[in-house]
Amino acid sequence: MITVFGRGRYSALYPSVFLNKRLLLCLPGLLVFCMALTAYAEPNRSLKACGHPFYPPVSWHSENRLMGLAPAVTKQLFAELGFKVQLSADSNWKRCLLEVEQGNADIIVAAYRISSREAYLRYSEQPLIADKVILFVNRQQPMGFTHLRDLRGKTVGLLLGDSWGDEFDHFIRQNSRIEYVSRGEQNFSKLALGRIDYMPGGKLSGQLQSHKLGFHDQIMALDTEITTEHYYLAIGRQSGLNSYLPYLNQRLKEMNDDGTIERLRAYYSFQYLNTP
Image 1: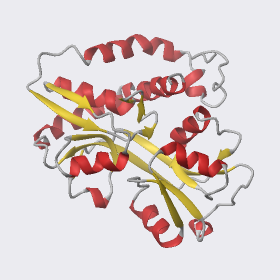
Image 2 (image 1 turned 120 degrees about the vertical axis):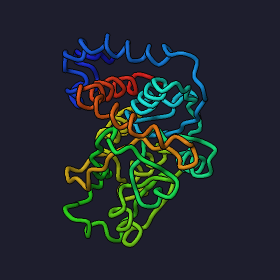
Image 3 (image 1 turned 180 degrees about the horizontal axis):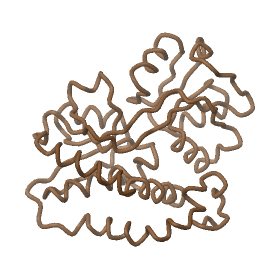
Image 4 (image 1 turned 135 degrees about the vertical axis):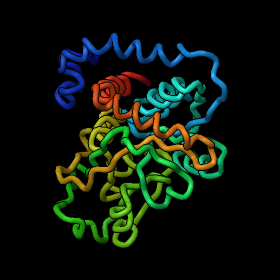
């Protein structure tokens, strides 16, 4: 059985989440935060939001719901503005991006800021969360990596719609063989079976998924950091929400400065490992 503060199955991996007893003092505040999602007056408009379905603790799809730090923050901030947010249960990341691009959805709860998305998205200036990007490889067939040139000719597994920043995206397109999948767990399975050479991913998200999916013995994270990207709250250019960006920026800064985002990251990391 996994415990938050004891010697749970994942405690050695995530001491900041599972061994930091100060988190106990944060739980009442998190409860108040979650209750606040429904504590506002009748909204004047319903908004549709979607997010990455395979990127815990930022966001993930579970039991036909979008879960995680980013959906919770999005609902909270727009509730403060008088809106009700409907979270899409779609488990396809590329479709989420397309829905906002076509004006069928209003918000992406968290997205990298890359050039190809600027035409249809407006981003918060204040990041939601920083994301250290590393490579995951097969533990039994480890791949040496110290420089991008080491990846030339290798086969990489990518989720449809994913990006790892403009620079790394360009390098992959020019130097690696790309195999796309529609679901995140497919890449983990292919990597464990040696069908791809590497898979880029956020350090924390990849480690969480590797353990929950049962691939820790087959997959390992390399130490070399590719880049640090940031997740931003993004609104569609057709959503009519541009005037709310100053308020969203202010609140995101406050939530980062007072530790709310970090506490939510710890909370949703634990929740991901303990939900079906």
